Image (cartoon, rainbow, N blue to C red; front, side, top):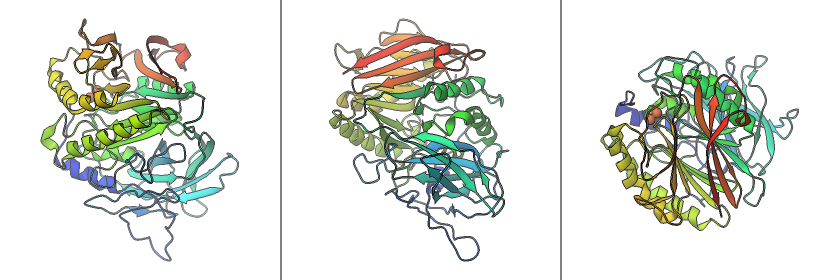
Length: 481
Ligand SMILES: [Fe+2]
Ligand SMILES: [Fe+2]
């Protein structure tokens, strides 16, 4: 079965246009009239540039204009993607926020502080209106705002709200709490939620499985959630994104979402509008990045264009991605004394027991592209979705289970998308769990310290429960070092 949504080569250039439209600055004042649109940004105190992308469009600096209420507030991260370089993405000292308003509201302000009663610091960001491709405009507004906060202390809780607007008619989000990543020397475990494939079949349903999973993430105390793509059925349909955002609004303002696109996002504008992620200054902004979250080095990338679908690789993205991935994994491997665990997150599985035979060529493309790097740098865990079930491989080196070492390949695609059937008896496979999306969902929670990496896979019932303790553990991966 093909799960590909509609796409077009044009989308790649539009992606570049949107990618330019992310950043912030506090230098937004203008004596009269709206400030001139800008094409690059240095978020205040952040040490990185956002939006310096080839083929630059303009985007709008903050103004206290409009009365639109902020909606769908979601935590993200800014920064550069070269590990060790100035401005490298660092969730222990920074966070970013994206939100939506009506098209007329250009207020892009963030206020924060260490107490919810005293949001004494503030900064301003940018916004831009998108024109959805191949789909509906958003009922909740098509202007996307983004602001960044830097210079924070590791492992500390901050409070923030976003908004602004016309004097006397300002609109603000509720105050959210966000806790920065711990210093790598901290002993407390970090919790990472794992999910993917939340889409329905384009029916505009309220995504009850995703709503339940995102609630589990918040209630488990997860600090970050990694997401392997296929958020919505048609990536260019803003209505579907509104539904997805509605289902996770209670979580997305307090848990840092690290997102990678799937084939259903289709390299389209709407996906990039909804994420705030680190990016290399250049043509492929926000498509690959990494960060350290306590003892875990998380690597996230778009594996679609150039690897799965070479025909639209108009930007030679694959070459750029794999050169960066090689450098990033090498640096992470050298830093294992400080950050021992290396995890990759992307969409298309490398090992999978799916019964969909037409996916063999996709897996072969993934194996050829990334597995040599994984083996070379001793990747611990690879997390993908695309196949709608849960699976854990035996530790693998090349095509064979490893006697020692090896990379564990996890498929975690049970976020509500239509279930797939599986083959039994695959030599690489250690555990497979199917599910019924009408009543169940599958997700993971990683608990990691410097000496232990534990991934529990859960099957939830959408009818009952609010936390992982209410759900059934269907698998557990335990790595120690
Ligand atoms: Fe999928
Ligand atoms: Fe997919």
